[in-house]
Image (cartoon, rainbow, N blue to C red; front, side):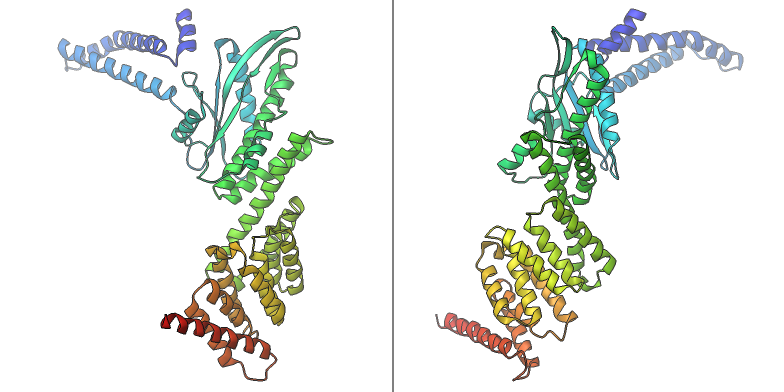
Length: 474
């Protein structure tokens, strides 16, 4: 019996193990039926309810079949791909190994699970092991298994054992990290930085340093997996969740790898730092857009704006050369009433932004308009409209919504209607642009301090109406 149980433990996930398991389950049922069933028949007979032998055999056969069926179902479930719930970030551990390294695999899995779970902050990280009857030998298999499991990341590759003059070494001879994300175009640089997270990591254990090496291997695999989870969440647009992963990861990298770092490690750490900054900015930006597109831009509580500004300052410290942080900072400073600070931030954004990016120009154009400087406002609108990104619908929609709400919030700044008219005429609705300009002229008296804005509005109206007449003649 001990030999049978030992064999079953080793081969439980395979067909020959199923045969032994069914035999043991059937034997147990037969023994139970023989010992207990006979007494039950006697009790039934004594109570005046004798059961015919044919019915007794029928109940035995049905019970036997049920036990065998339940055993098979349990075996099939036990050897299938583990499943994750929808609110879990699932990690599949799927090394390919032989029997002689099974103990090392079990030990590493325990350490890895503890390592991953110890960094669970506001999210549910779940690590499950693929049964040994299943293996992954290609990216497509890893992707299919992740989809079946509802998981996010798979760790796979052959684990082998080697003997040399220094003793026995066990570990991944080749390790792969696969994660699923929504369709997106990733740059070559992104793939390179993902690959850099693997360079220099420890994926093997020496017998003489069994405990310490296992801890380091689990830690290094954990770092790579957490980075993959963070990138996945970024690409999927789940920025608040990404921060929960990337924030602690960035802190751990700074604490673990002090002093001079190899170039690949520098690239890995910097990319995590930049990703954290990007996630921070985008998380706030999404919250901001909710207010913007609901028409509640000026209902944002001051403490919320101050919180956003503080977070953007942290993002700038992490990635000081990213123009998007300065664009966002300018918006929040304006909403807090710091017009000059907002303009300074947008100027910095323009210097850092790629040449095709028009958002800083539109921001500065609005701010100059707000301050009553037509000349500089015209210049920045012209510069922004000359760039390719000025045709991005979402950005233009944000600008127009922002100005519309600002017109209502600051009725004394009548010239804001000119800013709105420019964008409506050039990138929005010409009809709406004409209405806005005509409204501006109707509420502005001749000889006012906004006379230069009035003249500009008249020129714009004359130009657009002249173009419309030319098209009608054609």
